Length: 278
Image (cartoon, rainbow, N blue to C red; front, side, top):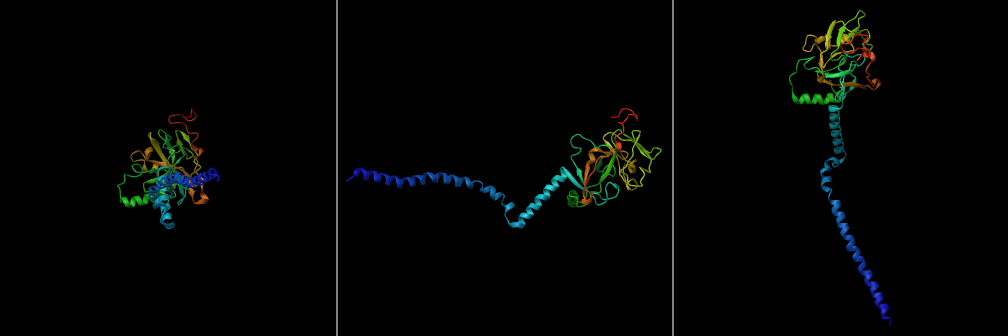
């Protein structure tokens, strides 16, 4: 009898029965680690469950709420829709238009320029300081105005900058044109049939303030109407909310509000017409 062969056969048999067990033991430990690793994020998933669970209606509500918060944040700091409530800026802007106001336009050292269309808070210049009303009603109105669904606050105005700090703005020359620093300006954006102003005035704009007027001069209450008020009808720079850059609605009027060339030849404050320009 071949005993060596039998021993060898038993050795192979022994290895064949034990090796799977060894492999099973060695593969079991990584499996446990994988299960433990997979189990670790579960608390995070439970934390976010209110966002993803609850069915399609709940998810839609969450998405809508988050979108509203995002819109309010953007409108509060970057771009705000502004509903045009009156015809004081016709024909540039018409009642019912919605413009996008760039609230970062003057946040990094740049100041409003002649010709810019700006939105500003008229408290302390166009209106006396207003007492605070119902905070809940005020917050709801502010939220609706922030997305262009309601008229802006009664203290918010939109006008065109005609004079900046140091400018002398007068009305009018022999041809009925407004002069800025002695230079007459042709305001082609005015409402058809309007004169630049029926009210004569002569003012030097204080530093840090603006002289503003509507494009529909016969229908606009602007700096001319507050000549006797503190500041002489001018608006402080820190009351400017932003620059109107786009007409966003209605779709047929979608366009960019460009700064006109009207004031390009106006000399710097104190410079004589025809001399060196600043």
